[in-house]
Image: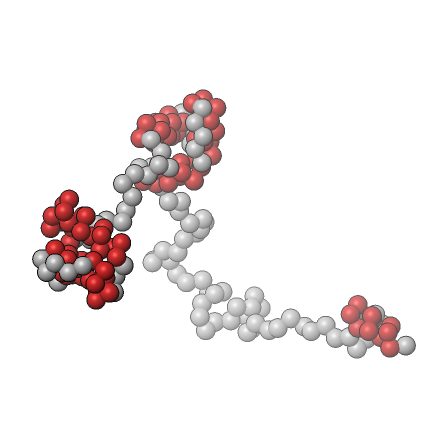
Length: 175
């Protein structure tokens, strides 16, 4: 049994005061008043939890604007022109006096299924029947000379007459 049902039963059936029920069940008196009012208006539906989703979305684009976005996309793409979100936003602003963000346009294009994912930019994708490249095969040398790769020769400062700028500054302060 839900707490709402217990509270409503305690007040209406048992005849206990709202303040006493509030103390016994650990709820506020205003919550009990709201539950009683809801029960008298709706009946048993008052025991069910309500949806928390808003009844309206005031910031939502009107359906006519969404339809116009889709129509513009088809028109521009059919002519071979750019039909991206920024272009559509420009057309909506300059030709229809509608200010819609490119992000909103992109969202509605995705919902309408008008955006195709771009393929990876791999010029030579590997296939299952292509032989492995001997230069990059596991366990084989990767050096063009045929030997195992070596580290680049280290630069030593033994024969150098100029010191590293950081050490040169330090030596300047030591004098």
